[in-house]
Length: 237
Ligand SMILES: Nc1ncnc2c1ncn2[C@@H]1O[C@H](COP(=O)(O)OP(=O)(O)OP(=O)(O)O)[C@@H](O)[C@H]1O
Image 1: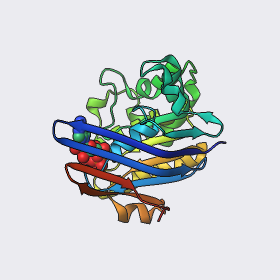
Image 2 (image 1 turned 45 degrees about the horizontal axis):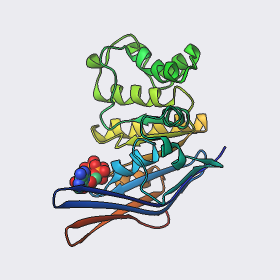
Image 3 (image 1 turned 90 degrees about the horizontal axis):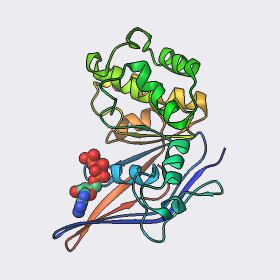
């Protein structure tokens, strides 16, 4: 399977006198590998995940490829282009920071949703993911009746349901106690590995990333005049 390669990325945000710039010289991820983006609060981890997940337009000059396929070019027809939505759905599964589940759907229906959107229904896979993530007993419940850990596990199952080559998880363990955080991260990595999916996650928790042997790339922040500049550091550590 093909790897991801982002290079020469620059995003500028401005809000009155406040300016923020994110710069990434190069970020690569081979198929089936994992990487953790670390950095202080406000360093742009979510911004970079959004860029990688085709949720935010790359700045001019950005090269972004998945194997031979030009992901940056998907933005050329604007943010609402059908090809962009298709690319997002085909290549990525998302685990948002707070689960982002549909409150009116059951666990099983939430997990099945990306398959319905991608037009690839597979009830057997939904059941298998629910079992693998230990959600069998709560499959018929709505998110409001779940613990935070159960919601995160549902979000992981949902992110993998349509067999994306890459899962993007924004601080997937931030809201969890240490034991639940370990369990959720273990399940995320194990399930993704079993599926051959790559994982890109963000985390403040360097010790946990190291314990799980996830290579880290750090966003380092400096201030230049009125601009906060965040740069992705070099090789994984
Ligand atoms: N319109 C804007 N103008 C200037 N700066 C902005 C604008 N919108 C967002 N920012 C800044 O962009 C940065 C990106 O934040 P982001 O949420 O990606 O950081 P993060 O590392 O994920 O933070 P956290 O760990 O707290 O979730 C923040 O410092 C924020 O203040």
